[in-house]
Image (tube, rainbow, N blue to C red; front, top):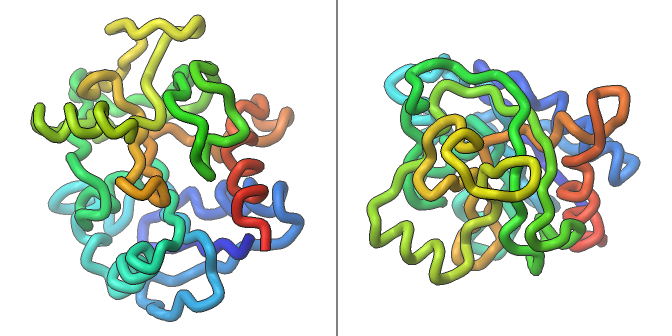
Length: 230
């Protein structure tokens, strides 16, 4: 698997992502400055978390117009894979590569804590090393993680099986107290229609090593490495 990680001014999770991918592939991913447009030779483009361009206007709004996003759009249109985490998810929605929007948390406060995610689908490159219904722990750190879409879009996501993860209790129940940011239908991550783009808010990349608090996020990266093995 040949992965590239985008870097925008203000992004701060690119090294976490690089550690995760190096752990499963044994080689460093290619780092991509946001003004680059040559993505040749890459199977997967990763947009990590942080505060691209200081989250001015809206989280991800300015990054969505960076030169590299046109190249990422063409990569996706060719059937390439894209992963966006936290600010990366926000950028993907702002760029129109995923539906909906990430609004201010329902509490209007920045949240930084662990959450539990329930896996909704496992027949994808991103989730193939999880079990359906499995619950895993991951950190979240965001002020704008409240997933919103109109009812028709939410119904389509549900009907087409495009909800990847939901916020849940440790035993897998959907409950208001587990949906920390107030996301519609407790949605924590979604797929594109062809299942090759994933956006999720929590940071699975920060749970790939016991020394960093656990390995709950490792199956996501192991699954990608296996599915996209050259």
